[in-house]
Length: 138
Image 1 (cartoon, one colour):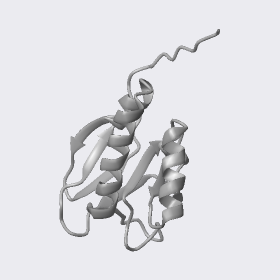
Image 2 (tube, rainbow, N blue to C red):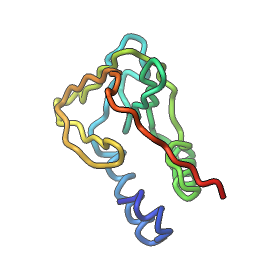
Image 3 (spheres, rainbow, N blue to C red):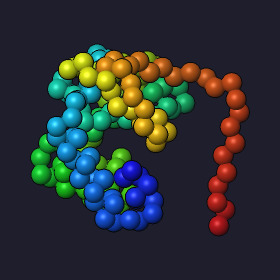
Image 4 (cartoon, one colour):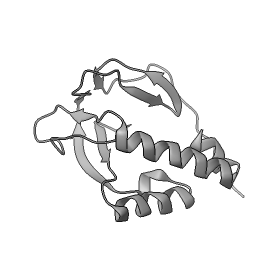
């Protein structure tokens, strides 16, 4: 919802969606990276997993202080939440995430909401399909 509001520059909708995200970040279940030495023991409000050439890159997003929330709000207003406060958790061939309270994990897969289990494992796999990317030359 917030992403669509950002795309359409619908400021009231973006503020509403960002407010909902803050409430979820403060009161929602945390996600913990189970790989050894991977981030904060108490977990994160969100962990972004991005496929790279030979590994999965993980970034843990948090907002604990007023400064963190202000930084995240500024990142949202500039159009990219990924610029908000986060820890680079590293790159892994296999990444295991869990919700310590045993709650199901909310997932966004390519921007689409999905419901996960309380523990999820991510692995990099080769795609048997060639993909074509276009760019705007203008």
